[in-house]
Figure 1 (cartoon, one colour):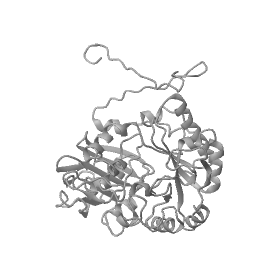
Figure 2: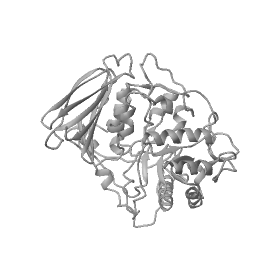
Figure 3: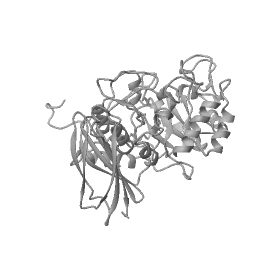
Figure 4: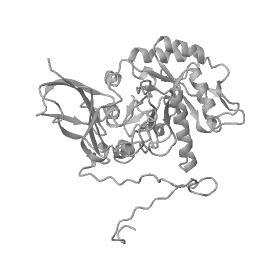
Length: 440
């Protein structure tokens, strides 16, 4: 125990299998890595690629079909298009509206998961709710779901389709299911409700990734343990949940700005983190009330824009309803920010209070900053830039953002690597910057 043993000891506890045993494996047995990360500053832990590097190299020889990118997620917004109940979310007309929204705004993927109300899945299942029943069959769409018609329309707009499936519905028929998914035209899916991390569950997740790779399907693991770098071996693994994320704002107030920043200082160290990004209707803490349809978010709009840079998230959601974005300031940044990066620098980090991260894509840099608990006057170092002048475009909290958290200010300025950017954030605020070489 801390304070009693002069020699620090690392203790690991394995989750028991259904029969009570911990591990069943033929000898010789290679045990997993256990890692202690130590850095001279907190941000060094987020920059580390150690966990990723300890995994085996990719088992997928040709990865040219793997394309990370932003994705809609209608379940989070309450299965609506304009903030209020309308046509069924799985109907062709609603899918067409979402697909048109994606095509117009550079969002490469539209997801379709379940019906509104009782949240019945898109596949055949007589039992109401998400948990599988005796006749659950993921190899055929539910009655009335015009998937083939929707797929053809999506292809005409160059939009990929994504879906959701309960992990229990794949048990005993993983290869059969993914063979069917490929024929249906799904490019990726969230596999949900693992809720256990024993040996069998881990091996089942690996079997899903292997089968999905054979059929060129991307995977997002949800309701699951923290990541372990497995995306190196299976680069079709786009995202892990393993986090109390913004979906909780539908029924609680637990995802506060300081919580968001504590997640970055803890869970994000393990690897990519799905966080249900994209909430575009911020309210103050005093005004917040949880709701299932058109949920609000805590923290300013710029706080939430910054998550697209600060959080490692190759397939981030654009989870609010489409009408919440149309004509809104800041949406132009969401449209253009990359999701897959070439280099990462953590510039400032105070757990639970502050995170400033810079990420490079090609010759452009993106900087995101998130704050909590108090306004902050920040000076952002730019020593990571190359030589010469650069054009910096900023989105930052407006002067009244503490009471009007959706208000933001934009600006452009010329910078060099020898200078710093001065930015003022509001209470629970943030900012984003796009920096491109040149300056003409």
